Image (cartoon, rainbow, N blue to C red; front, side, top):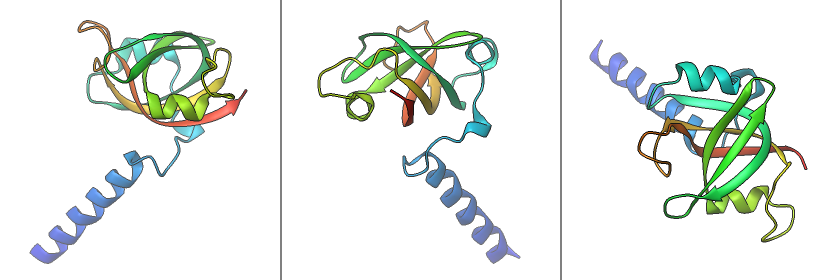
Amino acid sequence: MSRFIVLLAVLLLATASAAIDGKHPPSAASVKPAAELNESAISGDFVTAEGLIADLRGGNGSYVVATLEDDSGSVLAAVPEYIRRQIESEPGVDPIGVRVRVSGVWDHKALDEDTQGIRVQNVVVLER
């Protein structure tokens, strides 16, 4: 019985780490509207959003803060520099207007202490 529990725990941990390791892009089925995320996401939730990049500004460290807009509103996304480069159509050109699906942890890292948003771990460019 205890071997079964250990095996089950290992399988659950492997599945969870595979989902957030960047090898599995965010799926369309898991997308939540910006308004819903702003209203009900809590720190530590793993979330997925989809929208147009409407604005970019500097963030903390190697992050840039993107404003993603969808039909319900907007949500902030802290994007690491290496992911930003994946989104750019040309090196150094801000990806304003690019439609993306992002997933990551809902928290305030790389944002103001009182501002929550997505700390992006995965991105799929949907339209340039």
